[in-house]
Image (cartoon, rainbow, N blue to C red; front, side, top):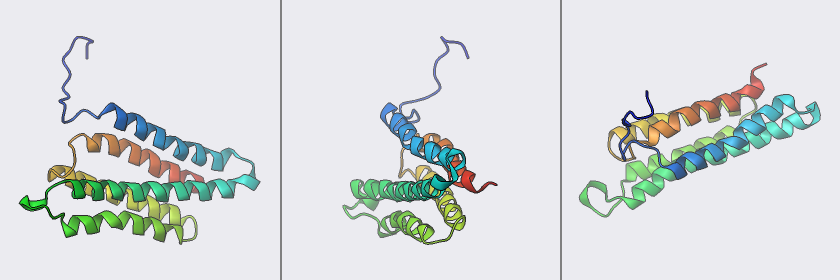
Length: 157
Protein backbone atom coordinates (compact mmCIF):
# COMPACT_ATOMS: atom_id res chain seq x y z
CA UNK A 1 0.00 0.00 0.00
CA UNK A 2 1.45 3.37 -0.97
CA UNK A 3 1.43 6.43 1.21
CA UNK A 4 -1.08 8.14 -1.10
CA UNK A 5 -3.50 5.22 -1.28
CA UNK A 6 -6.91 5.94 0.22
CA UNK A 7 -7.75 4.29 3.51
CA UNK A 8 -10.31 1.49 3.46
CA UNK A 9 -11.39 2.32 6.99
CA UNK A 10 -14.58 4.24 7.56
CA UNK A 11 -15.46 6.21 10.68
CA UNK A 12 -17.53 3.22 11.84
CA UNK A 13 -14.69 0.70 11.46
CA UNK A 14 -11.71 2.80 12.58
CA UNK A 15 -10.71 2.22 16.19
CA UNK A 16 -10.91 5.52 18.11
CA UNK A 17 -7.45 6.63 19.21
CA UNK A 18 -8.42 6.88 22.87
CA UNK A 19 -9.73 3.30 22.90
CA UNK A 20 -6.60 2.04 21.16
CA UNK A 21 -4.16 3.81 23.49
CA UNK A 22 -6.04 2.91 26.67
CA UNK A 23 -6.32 -0.72 25.57
CA UNK A 24 -2.59 -0.83 24.86
CA UNK A 25 -1.90 0.70 28.27
CA UNK A 26 -4.25 -1.83 29.86
CA UNK A 27 -2.28 -4.67 28.30
CA UNK A 28 1.04 -3.54 29.81
CA UNK A 29 0.36 -5.01 33.27
CA UNK A 30 -0.43 -8.36 31.65
CA UNK A 31 2.86 -8.33 29.79
CA UNK A 32 4.91 -7.15 32.77
CA UNK A 33 3.40 -9.53 35.34
CA UNK A 34 3.52 -12.46 32.93
CA UNK A 35 7.15 -11.90 32.04
CA UNK A 36 7.88 -11.27 35.70
CA UNK A 37 6.58 -14.69 36.64
CA UNK A 38 9.19 -16.35 34.46
CA UNK A 39 12.05 -13.86 34.93
CA UNK A 40 11.80 -12.86 38.59
CA UNK A 41 13.62 -14.68 41.37
CA UNK A 42 11.62 -17.74 42.49
CA UNK A 43 10.67 -16.11 45.79
CA UNK A 44 8.65 -13.43 43.89
CA UNK A 45 7.12 -15.56 41.14
CA UNK A 46 4.05 -16.76 43.05
CA UNK A 47 3.13 -13.23 44.09
CA UNK A 48 3.43 -12.09 40.47
CA UNK A 49 1.22 -15.00 39.32
CA UNK A 50 -1.46 -13.98 41.82
CA UNK A 51 -1.18 -10.33 40.77
CA UNK A 52 -1.52 -11.35 37.12
CA UNK A 53 -4.63 -13.40 37.83
CA UNK A 54 -6.21 -10.66 39.94
CA UNK A 55 -5.63 -8.12 37.20
CA UNK A 56 -7.09 -10.56 34.66
CA UNK A 57 -10.19 -10.96 36.81
CA UNK A 58 -10.63 -7.19 37.07
CA UNK A 59 -10.31 -6.78 33.31
CA UNK A 60 -12.75 -9.63 32.62
CA UNK A 61 -15.26 -7.92 34.93
CA UNK A 62 -14.64 -4.63 33.13
CA UNK A 63 -15.43 -6.27 29.78
CA UNK A 64 -18.80 -7.37 31.13
CA UNK A 65 -19.35 -3.86 32.43
CA UNK A 66 -18.90 -2.50 28.92
CA UNK A 67 -21.94 -4.52 27.84
CA UNK A 68 -23.92 -3.35 30.88
CA UNK A 69 -23.13 0.26 30.01
CA UNK A 70 -24.04 -0.14 26.35
CA UNK A 71 -27.32 -1.80 27.26
CA UNK A 72 -28.22 0.85 29.81
CA UNK A 73 -27.44 3.59 27.29
CA UNK A 74 -29.48 2.28 24.38
CA UNK A 75 -33.21 2.03 23.93
CA UNK A 76 -34.00 -1.66 23.73
CA UNK A 77 -36.59 -2.86 21.24
CA UNK A 78 -38.06 0.64 20.85
CA UNK A 79 -38.64 1.12 24.58
CA UNK A 80 -36.68 2.75 27.37
CA UNK A 81 -36.22 -0.60 29.09
CA UNK A 82 -32.86 -2.37 28.81
CA UNK A 83 -32.91 -6.00 27.77
CA UNK A 84 -32.98 -8.37 30.75
CA UNK A 85 -31.14 -10.96 28.64
CA UNK A 86 -28.27 -8.64 27.66
CA UNK A 87 -27.96 -7.22 31.17
CA UNK A 88 -27.91 -10.76 32.56
CA UNK A 89 -25.22 -11.82 30.09
CA UNK A 90 -23.15 -8.76 31.00
CA UNK A 91 -22.68 -9.96 34.59
CA UNK A 92 -21.43 -13.42 33.58
CA UNK A 93 -17.82 -12.27 33.04
CA UNK A 94 -17.68 -10.98 36.64
CA UNK A 95 -19.00 -14.27 37.95
CA UNK A 96 -16.55 -16.22 35.79
CA UNK A 97 -13.68 -14.05 37.03
CA UNK A 98 -14.64 -14.64 40.64
CA UNK A 99 -14.99 -18.37 40.09
CA UNK A 100 -11.65 -18.56 38.28
CA UNK A 101 -9.90 -16.94 41.22
CA UNK A 102 -11.24 -19.67 43.49
CA UNK A 103 -9.64 -22.42 41.40
CA UNK A 104 -6.17 -23.82 42.05
CA UNK A 105 -3.52 -22.94 39.49
CA UNK A 106 -3.18 -23.41 36.59
CA UNK A 107 -6.95 -24.00 36.37
CA UNK A 108 -7.74 -20.43 37.40
CA UNK A 109 -5.61 -19.04 34.57
CA UNK A 110 -7.30 -21.45 32.15
CA UNK A 111 -10.72 -20.40 33.48
CA UNK A 112 -9.91 -16.72 32.96
CA UNK A 113 -8.55 -17.46 29.48
CA UNK A 114 -11.62 -19.42 28.40
CA UNK A 115 -13.88 -16.74 29.87
CA UNK A 116 -12.02 -14.00 27.98
CA UNK A 117 -12.40 -15.95 24.74
CA UNK A 118 -16.11 -16.56 25.37
CA UNK A 119 -16.59 -12.87 26.13
CA UNK A 120 -14.81 -12.05 22.88
CA UNK A 121 -17.16 -14.39 21.00
CA UNK A 122 -20.13 -12.63 22.62
CA UNK A 123 -18.63 -9.26 21.67
CA UNK A 124 -18.44 -10.34 18.04
CA UNK A 125 -22.05 -11.55 18.12
CA UNK A 126 -23.13 -8.22 19.61
CA UNK A 127 -21.32 -6.35 16.84
CA UNK A 128 -23.03 -8.50 14.21
CA UNK A 129 -26.40 -7.73 15.83
CA UNK A 130 -25.65 -3.99 15.91
CA UNK A 131 -25.35 -3.72 19.69
CA UNK A 132 -21.65 -2.75 19.74
CA UNK A 133 -19.54 -0.58 17.41
CA UNK A 134 -18.17 -2.17 14.24
CA UNK A 135 -14.58 -1.36 15.19
CA UNK A 136 -14.77 -3.26 18.49
CA UNK A 137 -13.56 -6.68 17.23
CA UNK A 138 -10.54 -5.04 15.57
CA UNK A 139 -9.56 -3.83 19.03
CA UNK A 140 -10.58 -6.87 21.04
CA UNK A 141 -9.31 -9.81 18.99
CA UNK A 142 -5.57 -9.04 19.08
CA UNK A 143 -5.51 -7.84 22.66
CA UNK A 144 -7.57 -10.81 23.87
CA UNK A 145 -5.19 -13.26 22.21
CA UNK A 146 -2.22 -11.44 23.75
CA UNK A 147 -3.88 -11.42 27.19
CA UNK A 148 -4.66 -15.15 26.99
CA UNK A 149 -1.03 -15.85 26.07
CA UNK A 150 0.10 -13.70 28.99
CA UNK A 151 -2.16 -15.53 31.42
CA UNK A 152 -0.98 -18.96 30.28
CA UNK A 153 2.74 -18.22 29.85
CA UNK A 154 3.61 -18.72 33.54
CA UNK A 155 2.28 -22.29 33.35
CA UNK A 156 3.87 -23.25 30.02
CA UNK A 157 6.78 -25.17 31.58
